[in-house]
Image (cartoon, rainbow, N blue to C red; front, side):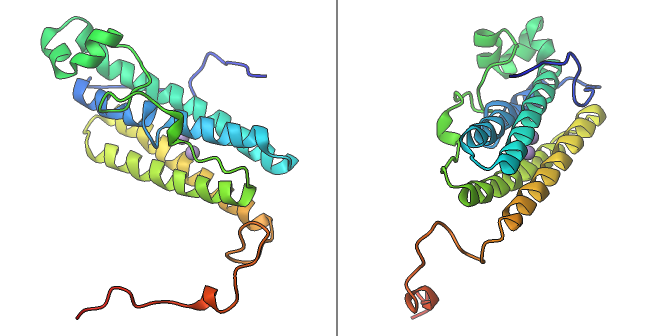
Length: 207
Ligand code: MN
Ligand code: MN
């Protein structure tokens, strides 16, 4: 069961709206490493998880990602606002202006629709947790790159908050993986073939 609280997780402020930057932020809204992908990946994993404690963690973080989606969405709306009235601003991102009226749609920064193909859901907890650690690393670096592309103080503050939370999630998923008490590199049930598993090839040698 879900409840919506009419309050943002982080209060958003945009000092100087920038349509082009708003469009880039769509990458974290409807993009491959964006907030909807994170929310869906962890939530669907959580619904399939038989372990109560790890399920709880997946649901907590999956739900927080929806709150991030809401924050990114508000940020995008504020940056996109000028395109509702100004032709020059609409011309910067005509797809968003014409199909969405300057509002939100589940697109990435190139206008491609969101797809469930972005999700990594394996049905095996230790594999999913590794997927999630990698997903958090990708989200973190995307926020960092976005922060380099704007001078807007309000936007930077919100992105700093979101970037920081992804590190918190990475720590939580790492702790969950460690808590499974598995031997290093133990994935699934079948052991690898002794000997073969310790072979390393120098397969990219100079002539
Ligand atoms: Mn997030
Ligand atoms: Mn996260």
